[in-house]
Length: 281
Image (cartoon, rainbow, N blue to C red):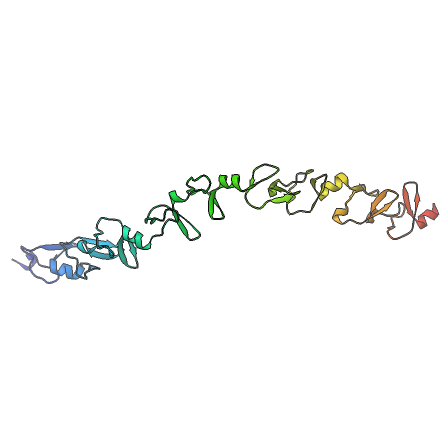
């Protein structure tokens, strides 16, 4: 037989005729050379995983099938659910017993992969996290903690929340108190223009709230000079004389427009005049 016709191991050159061989990338190897060159080393027994063995792998780590066992109970992990902790391979039962959190309600282990609820360091099975009032699972819905209990939003509103005296709906956060009554911020409005009053200066008349503009327009005295309201609420200075009022800046001589604030003046029918213009008249 010529050299070209020989069927030898690519690495050790021994003849493979009549022997078991393994092909890798179109190249033949005897089993010994293949295992020495390419076989993975078992994480458990440190021996090569031969071609006649099943190679089980997890995240670039390899085991013989018979070596792939739970580090706690030694049960086989082949074709079973597993979990890893600190490089240890564990069955789900051992992992849950040693590392999984316990349900705050039923005190049983919350198994890996099962749905759970977590809040402030406590854990619950999803079906164990119940509204304290209606005893229905809250699931993924919003909830409100109160004292040592947890409530779904509808139950919390029924049992604890104040009702807005305007819209009659529950006030769950914030709110405004006026005349010892609760209001939503967005419901506390000026009775005149319906502008929101929360965070704004306002006043009241006959127990109704008004913004300063509406109160001035409706109830404030009017300036004889410009006919606009004189609002003492806004800090405006004004002059009062014989049941008539003027803004300080409007209290001027009818003829020469000189300011009469702090000066002597004369009246002529409805006009007010400085002393100079009054003498000329």
